Length: 92
Image (cartoon, rainbow, N blue to C red; front, side, top):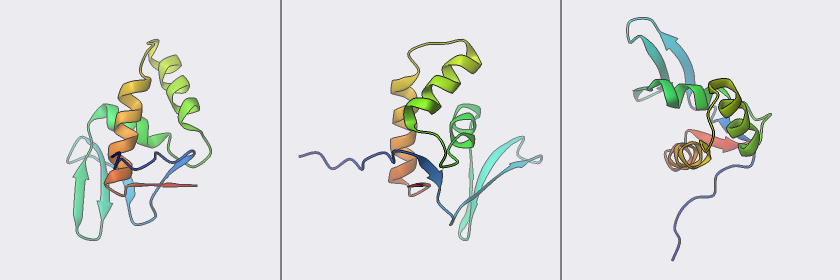
């Protein structure tokens, strides 16, 4: 039985969270009423593109183009699935 949540078609940050760069943390963070999540650079690059205007394929293509890499799809979709599981993302 597959209990994975479906990744939103056009992922957007859940309005319960706010993403911003924290100088003290030297990284992007997700802020929410109960606390804060410090994001690594890869997670930040992915979530910055989750504005509800891009599909998952467009996010993958944009990051592969930006970094001159290929085959990033599995890692990006894994991050998006985990972000969905944590309720950070919704479908726009």
